[in-house]
Every structure is written in C-alpha cells, then in structure tokens.
Amino acid sequence: DADVTQTPRNRITKTGKRIMLECSQTKGHDRMYWYRQDPGLGLRLIYYSFDVKDINKGEISDGYSVSRQAQAKFSLSLESAIPNQTALYFCATSALGAGNEQFFGPGTRLTVL
Amino acid sequence: QKEVEQNSGPLSVPEGAIASLNCTYSDRGSQSFFWYRQYSGKSPELIMSIYSNGDKEDGRFTAQLNKASQYVSLLIRDSQPSDSATYLCAVKGYSGNTPLVFGKGTRLSVIA
Image (cartoon, rainbow over all chains, first blue to last red):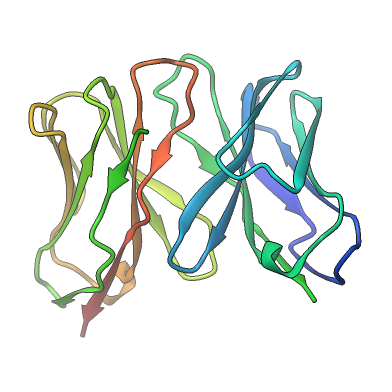
C-alpha cells in the first residue's frame, strides 16, 4: 500500500542536541508538510514543500529547518533542541491538482529533557 | 489571517444517537473542506471531503456545507463508542498554493 512513514517513532533527547526527523512516502505526491501537535493547540504547520525545489515556512518555523532530498523524502531538523519542542510531530503529503486532501504519517513523539 | 473555528468540546452523546460537529471558517473563497478523525496519540485520518453546497453521505457520516454561511458540519448517525475521538475540520483556500488550514478539533465522547 502507498504510505507515509516517519522515523523514529519515539525519541528522547537532551537540551542542545541536534535532532533529525525523517519522512518518506510512496504515494507519489509532490507536496509534503511538517506539523507539530501540542495538547489544546491543535496542529501547527512548521514547514511545507510543494516540490523538491520549493520550501516554505509555516506558522512556527523558528528553531526548525527542513530538507527536501527527493520527491519522496522530507526531513525536519531541530538544530539545538529545547524542552518546549517536546511534542508530537506529523508529516503529511498531498497531490498536486487534486482536492488537496492531506494524508498523515504515524507521527514521531519527541521528548526534550 | 485565515481561521477555522471549532468548539473544543467535549461533546458527549449516548450510544446510538446522532453526533453533530460544527466548523466555521473565515476565508469566503475557500473551495475544499475536510473532516479528519484523530484517536488519542494517533495521526489524523481523513474521513470525509466536501466541495459543493449541500450534503454528502458516506455510511454513517454526513458532511454538510453552506458556503454562504461559511459553515461546515459533520453528522455521525448511530454513534458508537469507537467513534470517540477528536474530529478536525480542515479548509483549503481559493489559491491552489496554500496548505490546508486546520481547526483545533472537537473531542467527541460516545457513552455506552
């Protein structure tokens, strides 16, 4: 089945460490997104990419960076992790020209101590 | 700033009843509307999409759209305890090059 995968699924790290979260998809979608979710705050968009050469900031990009290595891969980096980046992180994809339905990966639970 | 508003809940309904979830949006040019279901600790799952005014039915789910009132709703008939989850409303604006805007979700609890 065409799918969206995220690695790692769980990660505990310490303040100041560099962390990379990876997302891969076999859906053939052009568009990829990174969200974080905190209790009571809903989904918040961090970065999105509409193709390999296109990267856009979302509403909360400070402290994060991304890399679109290929159509199927989109990585999120925390250059120097801090405790308030503890959250559930989701990758999502959507197809160009469709209804723009987004399909989500299973999520990465990140804890920064 | 484009906004999507939902009552956070919790909305509690007895098993077998109809659950009604509501969503309003600020961008009058919005074209596409989606409902996602999210179980605690899991990822959002697309359950309904609607693009034109009126009702769209899929099994026990009915999505209703009223663009003039900037209002979209989701009805769940014969609610089951397994429907207990948070339901996210998402809206796509007029431009093709903008991500979906998500509401913060409504938590539904179906009581057996």
